Image (cartoon, rainbow, N blue to C red):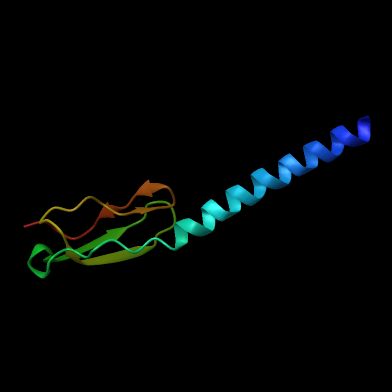
Length: 84
């Protein structure tokens, strides 16, 4: 009787693992989102620095004049470019 229960549990686990894997692979087949219209992006010249590791990044295009800071090392980066 114990062997039958083990087989049923194994088959159920296989089914759920297979179903989860197929859902994950199906997510990769979704089309990418449409890009913003060409006039929507604005040119910006902002430099950011990560306070934790010192990495720097430059943002050249953004959807608005005052974009949110990018994240690095699980924290917001600090703006180092003077804002006019």
